[in-house]
Length: 105
Image 1 (spheres, rainbow, N blue to C red):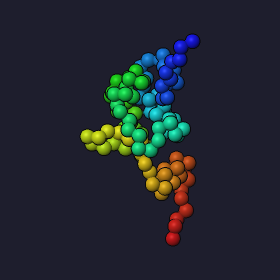
Image 2 (cartoon, helix red, strand yellow):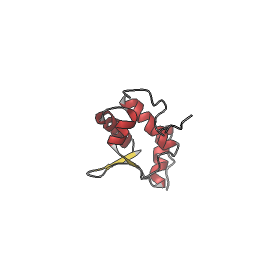
Image 3 (tube, one colour):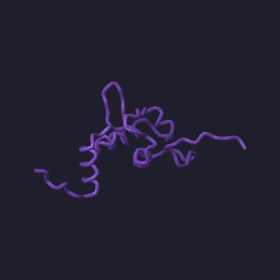
Image 4 (tube, rainbow, N blue to C red):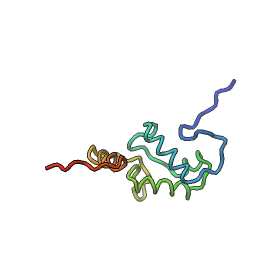
């Protein structure tokens, strides 16, 4: 049986036309599972090819991830997995958990 290449971000490589929400979820999961590490470049064309989606859908997903500070966009450079400081990571974690950090005085 010949070996086939498995794309790390796609659960079902035969599925077509991913929505921006599906793309968002898969990229987010890959980041959480450390399959995409901080500083990794996220090329729109490559992601569009992997997800069999338009670049517009990929950009929409990446924009949502950027709004949530999970990825960063740099003009003329592209999209990258965010490299948060310890304090930023703590803030994001606490915000997602719905808790408020105790004041530090």
